[in-house]
Image (cartoon, rainbow over all chains, first blue to last red; front, top):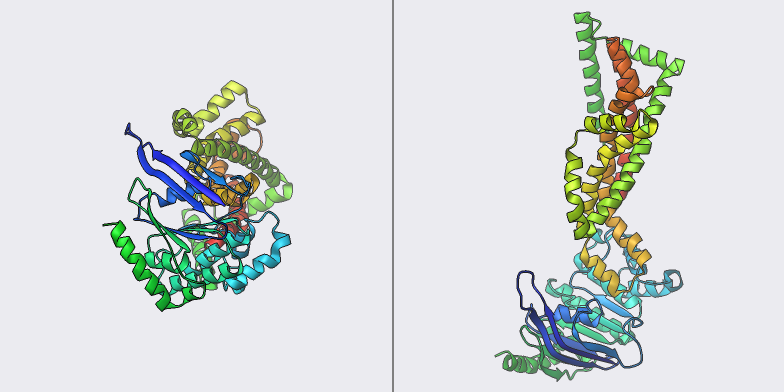
Length: 245
Length: 248
């Protein structure tokens, strides 16, 4: 469905002549409905890669092509950032309605997502009045409400306490069972990647390239069972250690 | 604000009036009239229509020059905040205009463009525009790039970005510029009127000054201060609270 090719991406820093390369030889093919996780050390250029894929950054060598004829522009993109990035001056409902072209026609959609994320009672609250966990749930609802053809998630559950993060992962799996969506998920937490993804891609330190990939052999139901996830995790961890020796 | 706070503030004002009254009685000098004579004169001027005639002339000048200053100042300020080249080019001008004394602008404007209404308005606005520019430039500089990225990744229209993302971030800066603007402008308006207008509170102050009539000076000053305070408490402060409501 999506073919990502980045031959080179570099930044020219002010004060230095030579451009600094952050991404090289990246080739990722993504199938319809697939959930892939990108795992790599922090600062390796994962966020830059996401910005290229989403079209926020067009200054790179390579190309991003959509197989089913969709162009970069017409593809509906859901983006969940590291911080929720809700607009503090809009209430919860308006924050979600904002990203829709015709929110009045999609009220039922908004309501069902608010119910799924457990936020129905808080629609008139402003983000500052909500806990960070609730804000991230709202960001999740906002990304799903546009029925994205691709959902990009940039460490969306980072810096949360364990129970909240676990709860949000469950929620994500639940929504995905109902609305099968193609997802690119960036994380540095291998356990999280194992629990969520169909396939894990490992990125090297900067300049980042893909140094390995592995499918995760878990059914949707098994992903909720700790023992099954842990068994897979042990396997992936061995590979991980081998790759990042 | 709760009731006790009102009581305290009210009694503080009463105390001030009392001290004034006693000093005036003890001193027995026409240079310090008691509060009652000032109130009496305000009442007289109100009945004769003089008070309203001069107050409205001044208020109209405040209003028009305020709107002009906010409009021009905001446009230039936002441009300077968003474009480095514009900023570098206009910054020296800004510093010059920030440092020209209000009086110099007013005198030069009257000398060059004549003692006309338009000159007066222009001179007042010129004095305020640099401050508006500084505040709005700061606002435009601190626009949050995270929100911009969010908007672009969700493909929001230009209209939505302007209304829901850019303007709400500039609004608090606009409110600050507006409040400090009103405070500065109404002081400058009096000088402009004193130097070259034939009506307005500044003109009346000039007249009473030449007659050494302190009661008249106080009557007109207090009436005008009262009006500006009313605007501050009933218009500007509630507006600012409304703008900042979401900060929860």
